[in-house]
Image (cartoon, rainbow, N blue to C red; front, side, top):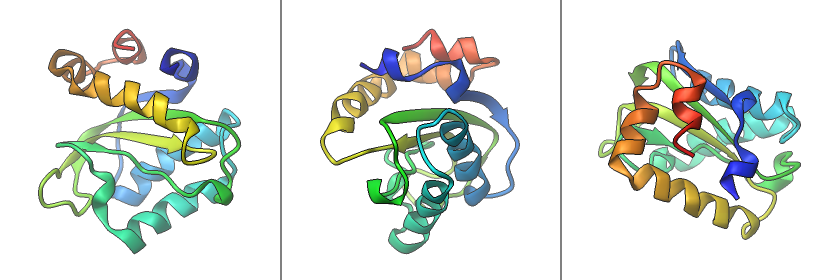
Length: 144
């Protein structure tokens, strides 16, 4: 399922950002430009982080920003960006973050299958290393 969702228009590498909000905006912009979300969803992802803390940093170096569907999710999707310099999201255990995977979830259930596939990929040490150290979009996409 994830191969049907992710494509080169949803991937950027070595993005230079100053803070976690800017990182989320960059990933959210990819989803917005490609019709997965409305602009309001990007702001909702940032508000979710501010209100609920950095629980979205689910693994060392990886953040999964998302928001509730009613804030502008149109269809299920993921954007993937790597950061030029890892940044603090506020999670003592898993900071700093180098990989940001923004999730557009239209409801609680439909994204779980794709998310499970994504987690399997991230659990593969070789694939994760390839993604984290990608020099271009193809370096990321070939791991899916």
